[in-house]
Every structure is written in C-alpha cells, then in structure tokens.
Length: 186
Image (cartoon, rainbow, N blue to C red):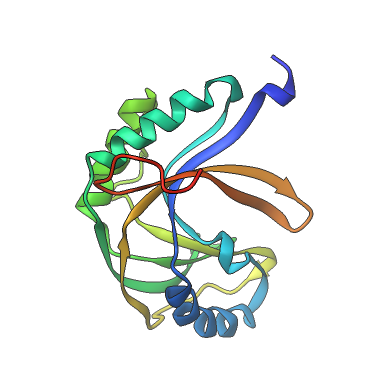
C-alpha cells in the first residue's frame, strides 16, 4: 500500500474557545519554566481514542463507526482540570488533566471495540488536553492550581493528524453531537 493510501487519525472533542481562554494565562506562565512548544489553541482537544495510521480507502467506514458511538453517548462532564507536566521524571508534555470520567472511559472502550483495537492500558483513563510539548529540559509542575472547574464534551470528531513544520496539525474530518445522529460538520 502506498503512503498516500495511509491516513493518521484519532477521535476526540474540540475545546471551546472560552475554555481555551481560561487555560491560556496559566499555561503561558508555566511555559516560562521550561522549553515548551505550545500547540495553537485551535488544535487543543480531548482524545477519546488514538487510532494511528489507517487505510484511507476506509474513511467512510471509520466515520460510520464514530457516528454510531456518538449517537449512543450523551454529553460527558469532566471536572477539576489541573495543569500538570508528564512524565514526572523528565517532562515532555504540558497537560490540563481532569479527574477520571467513567463516561469518557465507557466511550473510549466502545470506540476501541468498534475499531477492533485494545483500549488504553492506562487505568484509570485520564482525560486531558495536551497544551505543549517540551523542546528540551522542562521543569515538572507540582501542586498546580485548578485551571478549569469543568468541561462539557458535547460532540465527537474524527481528526486527521498531519506532520507540520511547527508540529502535528489536527483537522476535524467530521463532527457529530453526542446523542445525535448526523454529522454537523463535514
């Protein structure tokens, strides 16, 4: 199979602009403590399932599977978003990490089953927004304040991820409301 027949995809939800604006001041302050490359806020998302490289010829089938899962899932509430760096020993990512969500874990597992892939081996499944990646030695953040009280996930998107000069570029290919039936963006 030729490289042009492959597509790198994942399933997630966008982060509303109002939530990005709440996070940004704390993230910018934390980034002064290390060598971070912040993703544009338009790229921020909460991942429900990473699928990696897939055969692009089956894109319609992938969309049907995501749409089906979205149609059977109600809106998901995340709580207590804190700014954290991962991993602790040598941080390479800056996240807003939320408390584990049974509803998001259930969606993650349903998507994994629909795509015939194993679910994440991380238990609990930690919902998070990746804000930045390090460009070298970064300082681990301890005891950071709450930056987002809560986040309501109301839609599910199938994203394409392409390498770009400033990092990965995530493009939503289709978006469905959670508990809806038809694509709202395509």
